[in-house]
Amino acid sequence: MNRNLVQRTFVVGLSALLLTACGRKNDYKNSSRATGWSINDRDGGFQANTDYKEQEAAPGLVFVEGGTFTMGRVQDDVMYDWNNNPTQQHVQSFYMDETEVTNLMYLEYLDYLKKVFPPTEANYRNIYYGALPDTLVWRNRLGFNETMTENYLRHPAYREYPVVGVSWIQAVEFSNWRTNRYNELLLEREGYTAKGAKYTYDAEATFDTDTYLQAPTLAYGGNDSITRGGRESERREKMNTPRSTNDSDSTAASNIYVQMSDGIISTTKYRLPTEAEWEYAALGLIGLREYNAYRGRKKYPWDGSYTRSGNRRTRGDQLANFKQGAGDYGGIAGWSDDNADITAEIKSYAPNDYGLYDMAGNVSEWVADVYRPIIDDEFNDFNYYRGNVYTKNAINEDGSVKVLTTSEIVYDTLENGKIVARNLPGQILQVPITEDDTYMRTQFTESDNRDYRDGDKQSSRNFQGYDENADRMYDSPINNVSSQDGEMVRNYDKNNNRTTLIDNEVRVYKGGSWRDREYWLDPAQRRYLPQTMATDDIGFRNAMSRVGSKSTSNKTPRN
Image 1 (cartoon, rainbow, N blue to C red):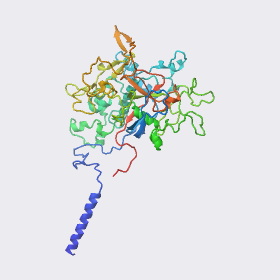
Image 2: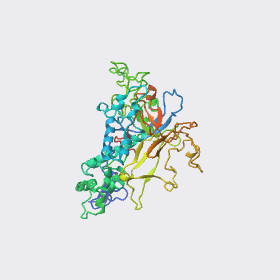
Image 3: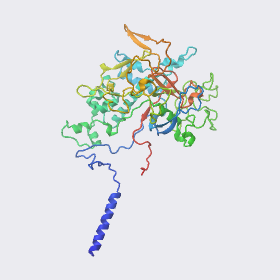
Image 4: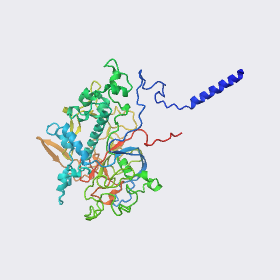
């Protein structure tokens, strides 16, 4: 063969091979993009979960894809209180309960507390009683409501009705409990804990997610037989880790426990939604792409500007449970146009476009935010939230995290005299961050940021010489509770110079309730109440942050 022809053939073939190699897409699934080393190699090296797809929706939650919207755009402001200043905000994708938390859900929480922390034992009594809803909220000086007072929480006729009589603080504690119980389920399902571990009703061996992730040997009170679960070989197979000939081998031992990088348990927690999240989800803008809806012209969670159905079969029926007029909570006999007088059973009305029920009417709902009259969009317009109090893990002298025992339960006496548990056994003790932790930081400088940029001098980062005895911007009443000779003494602030009810302990609640007129059904409307108080028309639902992509749908990568 001609030598030149051979050379040309070789060059063409090599070029084609190089082009093919260059065009071949390397997904780097099982090799490092940084070093080229193998990932999850059985001979050793870096271990990572390369099969993770996306976040699984936790029980009760539906996906809410984030986006931009006009927060605070109310259609009516008959009170002229300038309580809603329209601002353009962007909310990150998250998950939200499709319904309010029900009596049945809350009773499961109370049952757990009663089994783990028996109220018959003096050192546990306030844990259970501090979580009990206030059933006396139904009483009225000039009304006969004893039926609800005695039956609403526990009678099976009301099991699928939204729980009420729950303060903001109690709602937060329920959310924390729910997170831990869900993660216990995931660990048992994947074989990382012993079967039935979630039914370990032992105050000294309660499970906490943060403790498990940061100090797994201390989870379940350090009971190794529970956290190992007796299925070590299956776990090693899942982690692609060979069985060690030495039981004390550190690499093998570390794979007995789930880590955050495994993506198995939920590191995003059940929590109260922020005000921005709640309002965004209630509007359900995913169903309306028109310019007017995008700019805030949608008045209710449903389409249109009216509260009555225009559907042929249900024409004239109300689309939510609310008070329609003086003495009219549910229409006339034979035609109850909203089919309720007090609260209604969940899913009694059609959901909005996100699949969320009762985002207007039925009960108002607690959200996470501390109340202020103005939303400071000039400082932040992404995932807006006022209420950050940053803490850190307490560390022992030996460098380990401080996990509380039953003798170290931290109780707090609220200004209404109720005693609640702030820290439970098995949890990591949290302490405020210090100046050393924030040195040379620009995005935050203090542990408590609830006051930041709300108008007073103390809110300024550069303010010097702050005096604790100086007049407060928000001159709200200061009630206090003290103990004298074993008796609880409640002292009311009777100062006539108080000018407001606003302080760092008042929280926003959203949405109209069965007690409210149509005016409050607008998702942008906002009210506030002290976080220790409860009523017969305020409930709550949980949310959970989404990690990873903005959308759950698979999209073609952008060039």
